Image (cartoon, rainbow, N blue to C red; front, side, top):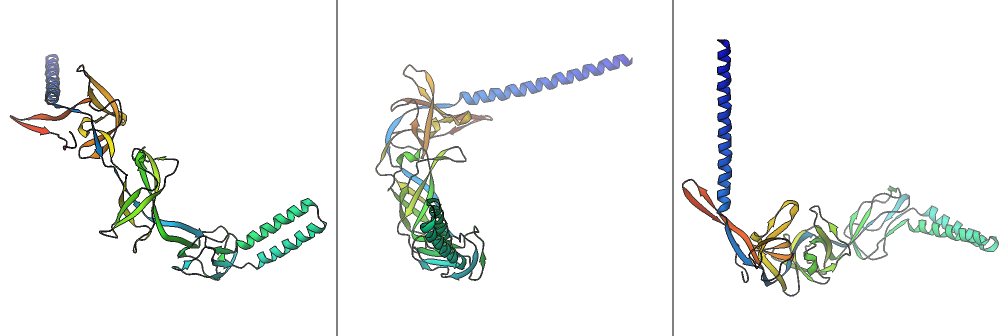
Length: 348
């Protein structure tokens, strides 16, 4: 009796498990079928690779900085005996800004001069060379007792007082900046760099100067580029503002554009015709003259308005591109149409 009861229980559980399996299989089959139905309703479109004239403006942003900066400290040790400027003072190139006690260095120079004279009278050529080297070293140490301005500018920061003691190799105690011009280092990506040249006009806008456009120019392009954190090649280009307007201070942020001289001819295709696969590889589907479809790897640049520039790839003007323009979705008993269309541009 117990054995029959056990067999009955096993049969019930087996039937239950089989039923669950059938339900799961049916649900999965229905989902796949629905996906296939949606895919089969994809709306295909064709377009041609077009050549068009496009005005290139390269967007940029950043922060302005002084044209030149001197962060100065004493290169020797001693008590500070003189500070001759204050923050905000204008200074000239070569002007003495601060000094430490140089008495011992002056004595060292006199002793080195006497030793050189003795060596020149009675010493060997080796003795003379050594005496000349010691004199040069003493003169350098004496010069290190003073901080002088390297260029015309303004004292932007002063962190030293008369009577304090300074250890050689410490942090900067005086900062001088050249504000006659301002500059900014901006990152230009590798695709845009083909259009950038020294001397090109740059238009900048600052939130601190509403309604005002500040003019600058591309002043320096380095020989070497770098990789950004996104793995894109960039070049750090320097932009200079020759006549900064009043109220524009180093550290202020800006947005702007580099105006590329003249219009540029480009090959254009709709952005929706480009697909990106694994590893960031971008492709388009080219329709050959015999009707076959070929996947072509391309490099593109987004231009806005739903179009991209064809930078590289085995495509030419007039080639036919096939792409899914949109899909139709079945929803319940009704039908809803979802279309993705590109904004018209040029000859498209």
